[in-house]
Each structure stands twice: as structure tokens, then as C-alpha cells.
Length: 369
Image (cartoon, rainbow, N blue to C red; front, side):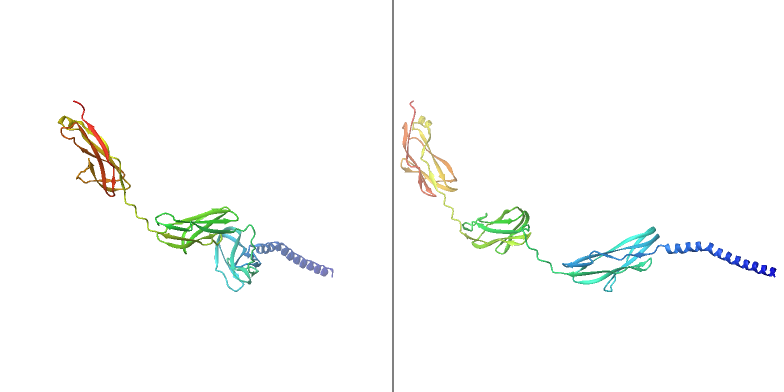
């Protein structure tokens, strides 16, 4: 009986040993299996964050630009292409964009988009990765509430510009020759230094323009040279930094024909002896006498004149061109069987006006032999 009992115990022990061996074998294998599972769980995956939004709940003037961004993490081994697109709350989608990556390990890529809204809107944005693995981010909600801009009150720091204008003189009467006859003057005033762009309007048309630096006040202007009688106005307009206009500066011009130039007038100086010719005394005659007078004209002209000697007019009507002063001469010979020559002489102008040198006496005597 004992033997049978011992046999049974031995068998039972053998069975238990087999079970323990099997358990031991299982325990030995379990760490490797756990390592495999841990490796599989730690393998890098494609992930995308919930998009951030620059203005989640915007209230203010429109249009307004709202910016969105999200981060995508991608495992890279060698060369990898990241393909993604934006999903919009209205059901539409953006175009697919592709980013080429290379290297090894996990790469973090930030993707962005901007949307301009012109009216009230509520919605959401999300990023959908299409490759190398498809994954979609959580939705990022936002809202835009457009409001009318508030009217800003003016302060002393705001720039103000004003202008006024006048004509100097405001009327002209006379010959309308070239050259300014009416000058227009404008005064620009600012409450702080500014660069001012302006233009002049003359009778509805742009006549002049320019840009000046103004500190408190600055004068600008232009002039006109009318060729005919007229009346009208000029106005100074400020184009920037803000629009402003001066008063209208009125003017009138009356053009008159120039007065005809006066005809040149001629005068003549007193006649005088300019020289004697004593060589004639050797021929049994009295000495010859030369006379001189000066013609003076107020302008270019032709003078006609004659000489009168001893009350007798010379038959020759002489003619000379004169512009200013010109000396003219005349001479007579001595009388035969005489040692003395004497008498009177006069120069008479007949054109362009009458004039006379007046009668002048002369006397010349031959030297004694």
C-alpha cells in the first residue's frame, strides 16, 4: 500500500514539477513579450495640435485679419512628404499643401493661415494631415463681431491747415506787355510743422502747384501776364495732409494799346568857325573859312538842311542820317583882291522839323606880307 501511495506521491510530484517548469518557462518569456509591446507602443506617430487663433472672440472694426497656426509632428526617416490642408467650419477646404522633409527622427512643423473677415461670423478651423498618415486636429472655434468705428474727437495735437489768398495788385490798367501784371499771394497756416502739398486754381483751371514745408505760416504764389482785358479769380487749394481751400482772390485787367512813339526831333547848335585857309592869301584872295555846327536828334531820322552865308542860301539841300549827335561842316573861299573875309553864317534844318543854329558872325584876315 505504501508503495502505491509513494508511487502516487511521486507521480503527483512529477506532474507538479511539469507544471512548475511550464510556469517557469512562461515567466522567462514574458519580459521579451513586454519589451516588444513597449517598443510598439513607443513608435513615433503623426500628430497635430489644436490650431491657435490670434483673435478667438473679436469685436471691433472690419475688415479684420485673423491668423491661425498649428504644429504637426512627423516621424522622418530619410525623405518624407508632409501633405496637409485646412478644414473650415462652413464645410470648405483649402488646397492641399506639401512640405518635403528629410533627416531622421521626429520633425515639428508649424503651419499657418490668415483669413480676412468683412462681416460677423462664427466658425471653426482644423488641420487635416493626409500623409504620411491621415490624422485630423481638434476644432478651434472663433467668432468675429464687426462694429462701426467710433468717431475720434479732435485734439490740439491733430494737424489743422488753413489758407487765404489775395491779388497784388487786384487791378491793372495799361499796356499788356510780357511780364507779371497781377501777382497772387497765398498764406498757408498750420498748428504744427508739416509738409503741405498745394495747387493754385485760376478761373477753374490748375495754374500752378507745389510742395512746401510749413512751420506756423508760409507764403506761396504765382503771377500772370495777360495779353487781353479780363477779370477773374484765383484760389489756393490744400491737397494734403488734409483738404482745405482759401477764399477767392478777384482781379481785373484792362489792356490798352501802347502810345505811338513820338517822332524824332532835331535841334542844332550855334554855328562856329572851325578853321581858316590862309593859303588862299598867296593867290591874292582873302582867307577861306570853314564852319561847323552840331545836329542832335531824339531818335534815328534823316535830316535835311542848308547853309546860309552872308544872308544868301546855298542851293544845295544836304541830307544826313542822324541818331544822337553829328557834326556837320561847310566852307567858303576868300574874295579876290582882298586880305580879309568876314560876314555871317547860319545852318537851317527843314526836316524832320524846323530848326536853326542862329546867325553867327565870322572874320578872318590874311597875315601881313
